[in-house]
Image (tube, rainbow over the protein chains, first blue to last red):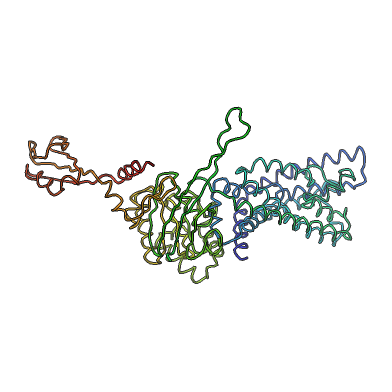
Length: 263
Length: 321
């Protein structure tokens, strides 16, 4: 266990070195956030919707703040697989899936927290109707933090499945492009899932991608009342177990047929 | 039973060929990377493993280190089957792949070592003594706080070695450790490996293309070609069979010195310098030198055996590799 913790700390330390990238990321995400908020404001002026505008702007800001959690595959790990340096990791008395999982988690968690904190402060300071609202309730906030953590576990498991595909194809780009597109749409990054037609939402919210950010954000804004939070967390938990299980089996199968090519 | 025991090892790779015109599917070709390879290694041995590129050396190392599963044969290392008891096995081994890196690129090497300490569950006291010992032997003292990316190739190899030896492995695999290193680094590295082998009793299996590595380090050498074991024994015994040419260069005080040599020996003259080549099987070197000395006042005389790389090349040619 200690080894995994240690690997987590190491990856976190590495992530902390790229402060310039954090600044760049924050500026980029703030820019996107402002544009999206402006678009929704324009649409609401034309035709007010049932969902309050402040919920939508909060949704946008929370999505942008935790963007790094979704769309950031660790190039170091895919490079290891591509170049064969994974051979070294195979020579460690560790479970390979777990070893990669903690590193992905460290990267996503550190990377997104570093960006989220300044961005959320910024979004709070924006005027009413532009920025981030306070959580609907204290209970809702607590549930949404728990939900965010489950979402993190979920996205790490998804990422590790992508890694499993990389082991087969030796190039992460194809699979990543496909899965990232799915993720962006189905996680609510492009259009908040709350704005999808209700009949669609019933299906989409059950898919794994909705568990990453959409579920915790709804708990935050109060779209999902705290009373139904346990049910939401249960769905998240089921997906975490399912995706992790699939990932572990996939990796085990890969490890059996692995070839490290070239000298 | 010996420490490493390999019996009839087989490994096949399936290679898909380029699709032929008009064919629907690509044809598959099976390459036998290892064929019935058997050998034993005792604890504390320093074994050289040579063969041309693609002979199956790395494949053997990967199987012995538990990364690859063979298609046939038996292997035990210290009584364990590497690919079946992977975790227990890898705890006892260290590996250095000369062309890859195990340390973290962007962080000081000391941090990478700290992580390895936790991975191998090295006790803090042991870690401290071992790290101090390796730091001194590998001269890493000034580099501990330097990120790996800033190290030169020679420094990096030393840092990699340190990382592979922290947990005091019983067995160390070195895959081309001197590749791309300068003369000083190479000599230092060889000295260190000898020290580690003697001090710790670490069994070392070294694959390399640098014959000087083998000459300096390995009393025993194994030759692999086309996936088969072709030779297993001392380097001298191996090269003796191909060591067929001696070159003697002599420079005289007098320009007109003309030694009497048996006919058929090529002589080339350049001013006062004379170079002859002959086979040590046909003529004794002592006799040749006596003849050269009889012809005039010798200022300098050098006897050169054939270049070792040429010997190995001749051997590979004869073995049809």
